[in-house]
Image 1 (spheres, rainbow, N blue to C red):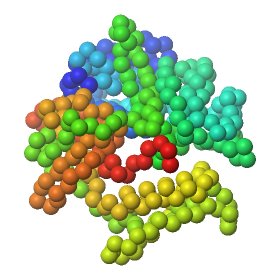
Image 2 (cartoon, one colour):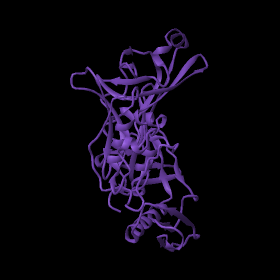
Image 3 (tube, helix red, strand yellow):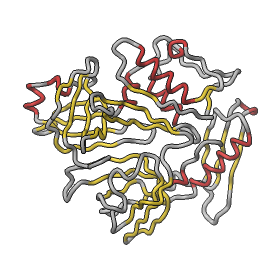
Image 4 (cartoon, helix red, strand yellow):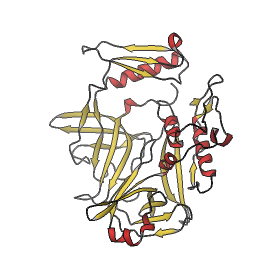
Length: 367
């Protein structure tokens, strides 16, 4: 991200690639990416413009891009345009949102499955290859060649994608990245080197996206501009975790991780049907119990653009040391960037609303 304030908003026909507008007058723009999700964009348009030129923002058929500093910062598909007071509110989501509107009509991703001990990254690429092989279904997305050791399917229970299953391709992709120690992704959009075409990419990370940052911080009184909420929930807390793995009935794998710490005993049950080994299940359950004993969580911070953490200085998945000091809490610790939303025209200047989770809540590749 080179600058927080958009130079222009562009729209493009999703099938023909024709440019519909290279300077769409969108106000109240807010946009940003997401960890293992599409990220989104919102804004407002004059109803007179929409009424006279509806094809500029045709929902489900229009790409929209945010350009700043001569570079595309965000891109996606417009999904919703509706009247809101004296303006039209538009909502868009990035590339992986398209798969929520696509299904495996041929089965096994057009013959690419079923899958046995198959890298999840390979299945994700097959999903996109299948989706974009169908007429009028190619939106020009490329998927990284990243490989992982996280697999799906066994000889006794292959991973299938059935033609009669009503699960969308998007939900399939979500399932492949939703567990601990699975690949991660984010959607990115850029101009090509010649700035003649748009590069739409699913960026895959294994064992993770991002890295631990020692060069930037999020700190109260420095770049955090409002008092953030620190969430403490008894619903999530547990010092006893019961984990179930593969198998049925009395043959189902089971591990328990428990400690006594002077608090009322609270238990949580979790299922990991893909885990076939007790050693792996034991490690996963211990990790689950460890993060459930960390009740104070910073869920988001609002930042100004400062040298302590300049806009564009962090990436999706990064761990950033966070210090929050206010009348009701003192919090310090590593937090992971799950995504953010840039508000270029916020009162007082551009803001970034950064979504966070304590880094201890994540487990990467291996167990």
